[in-house]
Image (cartoon, rainbow, N blue to C red):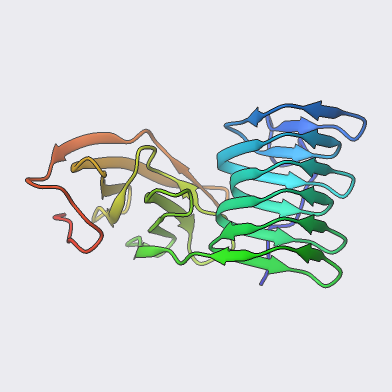
Length: 219
């Protein structure tokens, strides 16, 4: 399985959070942008909508929770990723992995367990460039969107739970059911091979609570 090539901080993700090779950070990192670790982190890293990369000189002692995780260096803790985890050649991980897809290159060292959860309710956009799906990888059902086809990680669309995504006829909008029975709408576009989303807004309510087997009304 091919994965997006690793790039140094600043090359492809302006504004990303970076821990340099000469830096040791102790504490929790909560980020809304990509996180690149070239130094040492002792503590949890949380970037649920973005990507975390542990570079060749990086070391993380703590758990990582992100949309996508790529490890080249040393990882001592559990990893939870909404879409996928990549263990590159030379990486050394001790901990459990919870994700939908995992790739491991020759030369990677991994000691732990893998819980690979399958996505639900997959819906391809009308132009066949994106796929929307539901996953409970975070412990709660949420809606994600990813490029299709391709190896890009899924971007979380919902923030308070979601199920049963459906595309509008023009493919510019995604409707899904919130866990509180509200119908939500969000704009979704492609940007440089990745997926960009707007802010979800309520567009109405269902007559009764939803579950994962119910159908969504959509024009």
